Image (cartoon, rainbow, N blue to C red):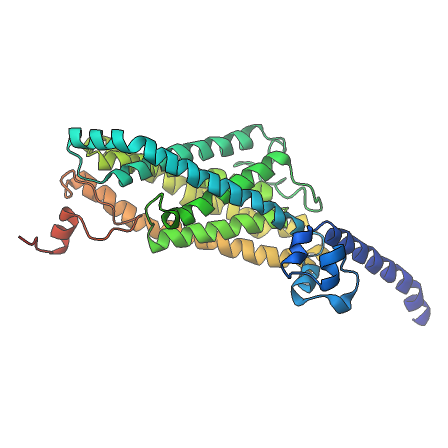
Length: 364
């Protein structure tokens, strides 16, 4: 037994030395500003090296937990998402200024009672939602990563790049764009270029942003992440297009568009999401790694990813009730062809039909 222990010990020490060398290499790739803001040691601020454990801070020690599956140097690349978000907010401000006069004239001509900012909000969300839906569809259809078995029908190869530290350029650009988009959705009301969303919608944005960043940092969940984006992006343009028709008081068009949105929403977010994505992350992700990788880092990714996905799916199921209620009001004609906006965005006061339905009396 003693001889067996002595024979095995050099091999274990060699594995530990190789693991430490990989960690040092990963630390050396971190930018200098990572240590300038106090996330590293005093020595690390000057040399970017964290080879002395005595000088480490607790946050840097946390980097060891991830092993080779967490790529913390990618956090620094999220600065491009911040610039993308600023660019989106700037483009939104220019679009609002360019369309305000024409929309005001159209609103006065058609006798539309909603404000111009509501029309601008839905036009912007329709355009951007259509672009993101097309980008995710093209990436899924023509990307080399997804031609080998990572699509709606087959997810067996979605975790084939577990040990790779390189991100395909098209996936990295798409992820950074999505992070910038959700940052702009959260900050639009603070920047004064958009309307504030309801608490549930803001919670949805925060959960989605956390899931996107987590998927980007952990690397091997990126392929399944693009597939998730494709599923989520299909119903968004239809929702805002139906709201735009609702604001324009196009009774027949808004009814058809909203029923089409409800069908796509139910099929994609309530059925396909758990059947394809959540099933894959629950059962196929553990099989794509070795037992050592699973106990070292993947188990934390598995719990976090599935918790966030289940939270998003629960929100989608919760949204089925207001969707069915809106369809019933459109079909029965309870709202009398007038727009209502108390489900997704935050209004200061209920509209007249909603107030009448709830028993409020109009003040003279």
